[in-house]
Length: 261
Image (cartoon, rainbow, N blue to C red; front, side, top):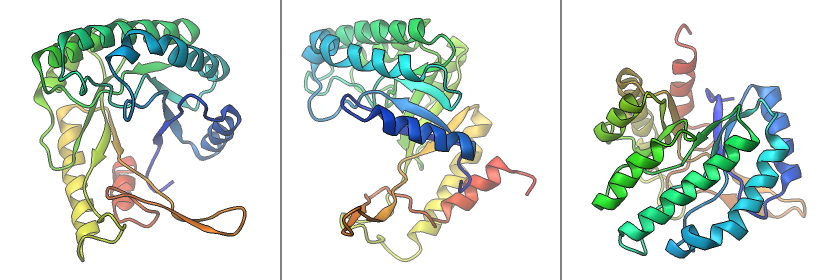
């Protein structure tokens, strides 16, 4: 498993429930658990979505998915959305209020359907406007939210405000996305030695994070790179933050999972 024991994946409305079942089956064989992120903020979410549209898009999807997989031990946590925010509204108070109500409603539904698995919001970090910072705090204070979520660059210091909030709430805190540029837009290494440099930066960040009390640490993002499709054609799956199969970072991850080796 390349030194990995948890994978965060997106399972959005319209995705194949049978395919997710196959992934969970394989995870059970390999000893891997999954944080299942049920929505993605980007491209079309807005204040109106958090106010009204989630009722027709989000609620049926969450109900169907959680009801089907609530007894699966491979589920580490349910996550409401990848990086919910109020960008189009410039971080307005109205948008923050609608987002809070959405988080309360959907997390309560998940907890009712499945009281045995953890729930994360999927937030980025505590930043931007006063309304958004306050909303980060009050959403994580909900009784139906079990984890404090952070996304950040591997070279950033741990977010003090988020760590203090987790301590105040007495809730686990995890970094759901740790990223570090390794490639250009054409998926070629930025320069010789960048992957080794990145692996060392992540090793130092992991040490610091665990010492500061972080409970989980996930990289953004794993990609398979070259895939032979069913019709024999090739497709490439990669990005500027990708980690491919033989990246030196995986030996770092393995050392932290098996410190005696």
